[in-house]
Length: 142
View 1 (cartoon, rainbow, N blue to C red):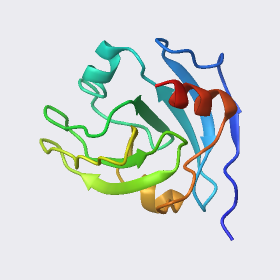
View 2: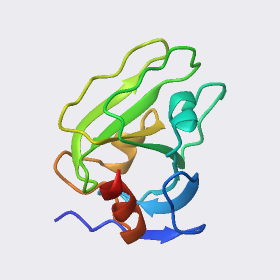
View 3: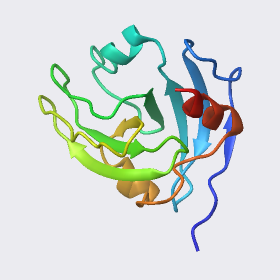
View 4: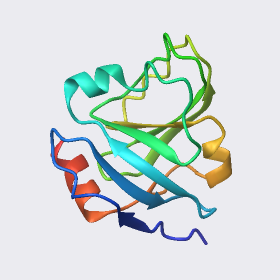
């Protein structure tokens, strides 16, 4: 039986056009992740470029994004592709720097994680990645 993810907010409710952080427990192995929601075009275009590392407990959620690239990056990523409800529709572990991620037509959003997080969290297809009413509402508005 897969445990239902638990989420607690560590900042204000995410609003469209604002960068908000949410603390989520996700996957079959309890793992707390601080999720930053990038909803502005400039934030989504920049993504994690310019960062030297990504902490193991952080993630970047890119609403309305079906694929990403790691051009100019210095570290690998795990990519989790989500539908509008936050269900995992595809997983791409360990995308190295200077690569293009998969284009997943069924996806509505992409979650970028430190490489190895998919395995560490026990993420599997067709399960909810995390659920939080304000996050689910934000994704549905996208």
